Image (cartoon, rainbow, N blue to C red; front, side, top):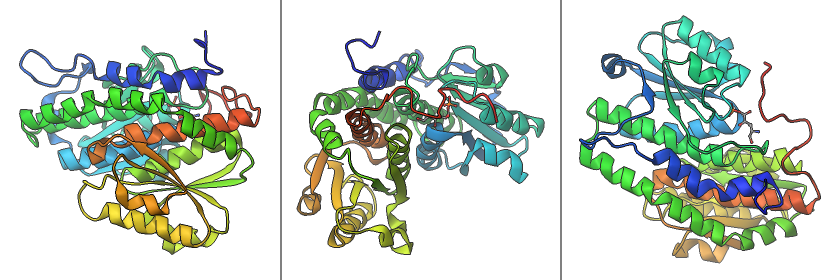
Length: 369
Ligand code: M6R
């Protein structure tokens, strides 16, 4: 049932091209309009919302953080992302003009469910992005957008994460279409770019041996840090979570811009640091800022493991290990940059002899608060 792989996690990492492809499938109607699975909220209401709050836990919350960059950019709707268990208890400002988006693989996460109920009590409409048909979250929501990743067995989420990001992008584009923030052609262009992602993910998987070897060689590390900026920041957080969950190694993700505000004090000789580098063709000066961060940590003795676009010459001189990913539009990069981090954690945990599918102390679905 593991399809020849050593673990479900490995199998599910390999299923990611299909998971993203299936989540994107059949989304345009005969008029070229984007459609979603089960949108039971009136267009008038969706046009009137003035705030989006994404609620989720763990990996799903990191998918939400990635989504925020895209939704705000495309829809110009202020978007917050909050851990579901924190949301409920801070007396959030929610009303009929708030759209709450829940993200959940299982659809049964109690913390997320409670956040959704809390929001509905205050008049908010809820869209759930979920991987499990007929589970509690979609049943209780006003609209549903299913991720079509197929069942995820390993406790550490992989393919659900990439599908959640994909589905959240679709929701963002749908709202932009409905509210007139984008022209049909612009949406079509982004959809076409999204359609190219499965092939690019496949390319990363075909070349995974380098990352596996790196994971195995680092099995004795006792701390690994991850840096990222913009959409690379939640990717860094996700890379750290994977390592904590299955390899039981101290791991932390930071916003690269935060380095000099504290975390750089952690850097000492031999400290492994992953750096997720934005596209050199992206907006602003993000790329050069992150390249400076690589130099800064390396000058203090860090072993740098750099994830950068193919052909990015600027990073070469400062990379102890260079992992290249295919070029992509900046906002879509997490669908690629996450994959080596998953492969790394899985290989490292396996090299330590751990059961990567059933990590200690964790359950696949957290149905208690
Ligand atoms: O089923 P959900 O997506 O609601 O689960 C949320 C988290 O419990 C989940 O993502 C958890 O963090 C995973 N173990 C991450 O690998």
